[in-house]
Image (cartoon, rainbow, N blue to C red; front, side):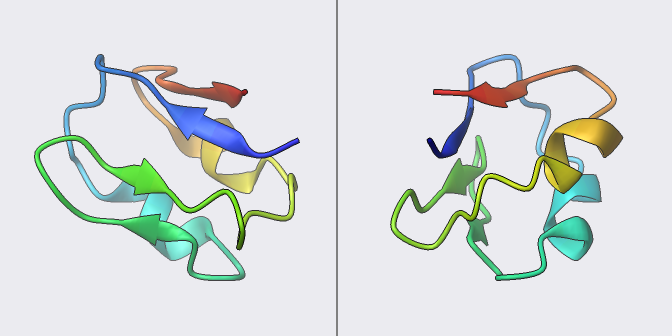
Length: 55
């Protein structure tokens, strides 16, 4: 099950460097590509707004 980023994302960029498979794309609100996400949870662990969670 892939992780998702909800609309509380502040686009701080903290999660991007943590993703080992580069599944996160930048934007107003960041997006995780479900086809690339390996469900490791590394991004969720570092998110300061707790905007990342399992789908």
